[in-house]
Image (tube, rainbow, N blue to C red; front, side, top):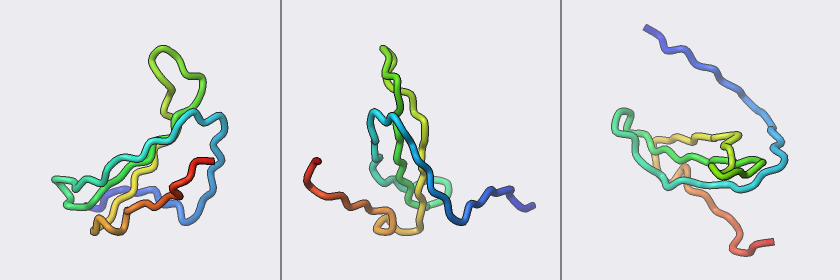
Length: 76
């Protein structure tokens, strides 16, 4: 039986009023064996419960190196 999928070939998203971005550690999924990493974008307003997650991007690959992330060491 086929599994349903929704695929987007190319897309640009603009997220405004971002309060923070969190990048998870790469972890290997126990069921699939794929390496997975998530980027969570938090929005506004920040309340006592914290900032709401407005977008989660989940990256997966057969190799950990494929989802490594590089960022500049400076903060602007």
